[in-house]
Image (tube, rainbow, N blue to C red; front, side, top):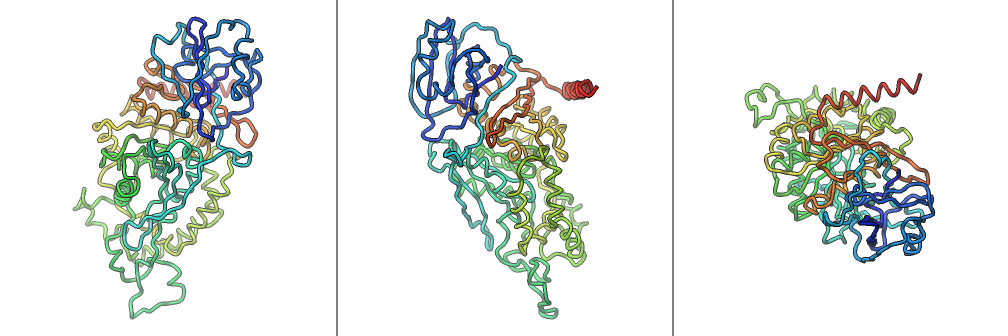
Length: 523
């Protein structure tokens, strides 16, 4: 069986062999659906409630005819569908249909029968598809700092805002595929953390002492001086600083509560921000969120222990730290090292990472990059641990959604399952194959899930979660193959949803089963 997702322009359901057809438009920019063979339509209760169409490869029903408004004749020509009561509604594209229980037929609900879900690919601009335009902006928050951010979809005034936070070593450019796609439905923002991306300082935070003077090459590396500039005396690139940065960005730039999405380090900051400022957050999505950050004790949380360490990320860098930084930085900023890291974190090596590679390399060449890296690595831990932040979010009933790449070599799925254990009702989607950055590796799947989750919350749960027809019936897990077009080629990933009663033991059982099946295939 194949399924057209609720992002398609058509949704339907059957009631006593009578049909209601709802067609909605998406302004001028509709998600592109892969070219399909002719299909016969089979609508079940599960298809209706998830806003999906279920197809079988038998008769002559053309998706093209549907899109061009020729579906009435096609419906009536189908064998077994002579009695058709059709109704066409117009309006803005919402991607789902909400109906009462009395509209639903008594067709048996079969979860596993929905093995494939056909989802839209990314907007193909080369074929004339309309992608959201991205604007590059700067916001001055602190002296000598211009925070860089990108935005899209500003014309969607009545749509909720979505804010993306990047992982360590990258920036807002890592969310280009979300800005162009999700920007067609929402107001989307992506921000660079201070000390990273294009949010590096615009001046050297340190100067050379008069006795030493300016030796050759010193001006090329900022932060290696002997005296701190007044504006940088309290500067430390820590998770507490980034939490404050995001808070003020939401208040001063966006101006209303947001859905916040964070990958890796950005996931920790997202959770931290929501825990400290629940009034600013409508929901949090964690994309392979790192569950820890920082090595040194926090001076507020552990003042006595913090005094043991003479330096914790402030400027200027001590002499011994400078030497160590020069050695380490020379290694990690090497193009071969950057390429090797990208190879590790992307499970699908066919993914084009040229643009990500060039942007990371460009950042490493900024004169402030090396000292900023040292400050980040030796900054104190946050006042709230990941677990503390999670507990606060749970206490404040902040919706949390988990999306993890299964093949992540750094943040293994076990970390996501620990979050799931603490928040059993939080939807958990495990994507495979996908590594540490699923939003860039399989953006089609992540964007599809994000759209569905946000609409689920915006409808106050009237719209089912992505891939589900009835969340109450999925207590353990289900798996779906998401199929989409990328550069005229069909691709697919498996997405497994973990229900409220899913446990670590279930996960171990699934792992053993999958390993056993692979061994059987080999033999």
